[in-house]
Image (cartoon, rainbow, N blue to C red; front, side, top):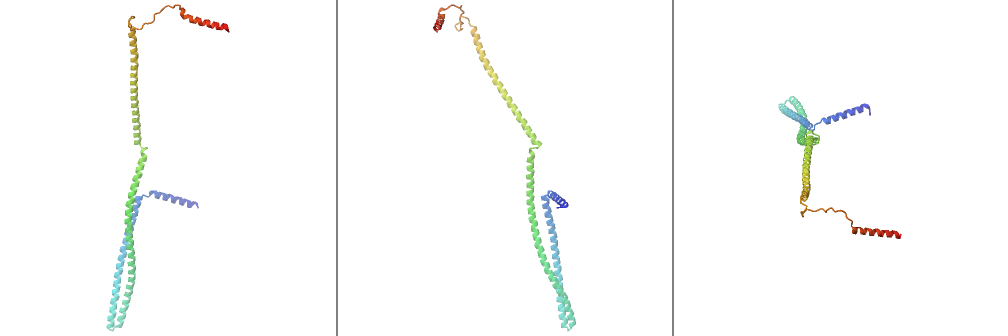
Length: 259
């Protein structure tokens, strides 16, 4: 493939792509309907012109036929009058008009056939236009639905990145943070109250014990309720308490002597 062929193909492909992108389905349908209606107008004009030509041909045929019949009667009249030469001229005129009538008859038959064909084409085109209009309305409805769906999807797709949704998300985060702070503060207040009550309970036990001790110390020495401390006594030699020790020492000595 030559360079110019490749360039031509690239240009054509780019042009086709541009045309495809520029085509609006709704506008293309409207344009197609307009073109079909223009064809219908032209076809109607053609049918009307063909019918007018047919009528003109019918008039010419009738005139030629009447002229041929008239000269036929003239030839008969001339023969009745004995003028054979005049009868011959009348028959020549009759022949001319009869040939013209035959030619017009042939044309007239052809025109009738053409008009019938044009009329059938006209009816078919009108039916196609009516069907095209119905399809156009249906396609326009589908196009509108498709555009609405596309717009909806585009809107939904933009929700995650729109500033409004971002603002809502930021506000939600702030509300959640504020709620967490409030809950934490409430928990701290509850914990502080519990610790205070625990301290009060602990302090109450100590205070009670201290009060009891103070009460005991404030009683006189002869009071039976006050526990008496053992009186201090001077150390004395108790022979009974040391005797077992001496015995045990003596046994150890005897065991050592036996070894």
